[in-house]
Image (cartoon, rainbow, N blue to C red):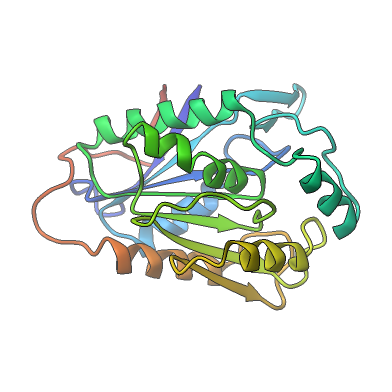
Length: 237
């Protein structure tokens, strides 16, 4: 599968890596404009954009990390029902694919500090793969969950988590995210609601992601990889 590599802005050595997974039923380059903004906000950081494996629409190139049983729940109660039945959990295959992707990233960039994030279904996959990543000894410094907190997950003590959710999200109502955050009650998780935001990624969120990365992996001289990548770079994993 393809991975797009964006940044770093200076063309200098890579000192941090941010892997971002797109959402459900979008093209593989859906987060590229956000990655371009992040390469400016996070100098010396490469943003990796893996492409989901499931092709839902060949004409428009729309992809998914897995095919959910009910892709379009209409209400918060519909989502609660899916949670009770265990139908919001990411299957084994996409979780192991993410483990393989993270292993490739860490080898390519010499173990540079790693952050994992995603939007909607992509963030669900990131969160629910942490136990697998822990077993493989591939844990990131932190994870970012955007508009996708629908199921409680195991958050290792050493991993920090930033959860951002829109107060006007019609796809995943904010009450669901609040319920899951309260259920987890993790001291390592920072949960914030952006009152005017819908099911989307905003500039404010990008600023918050940059601040999160800077807090938990501040840039320092030395370390990281000597590899230099450019916005047009694209590799198969």
